[in-house]
Length: 85
Image (cartoon, rainbow, N blue to C red; front, side):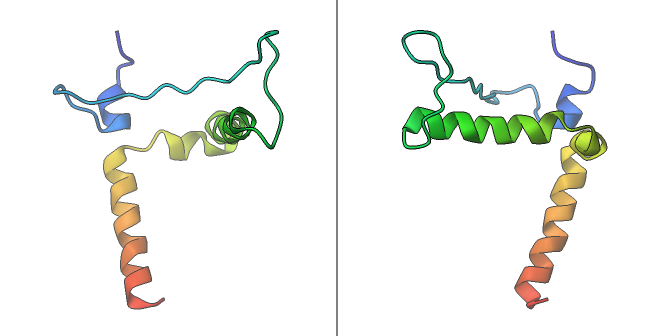
């Protein structure tokens, strides 16, 4: 069962779309990998950054915008970039 506005928020439809799952990496003792020189540690740092953005109350309204709105915003930015503004 998906949330009511799932298709609107994600831009998914009812054909074969993909959802990706991210999860933290743990060492053999069950501790979160934090080594900044390891691939797992870097992935965990990146996942922390994603989670900070997604869970931030300041971002709540922007994150709930329809993907159609976000696409429109990106198109406007692209026009600015292409025109050299």
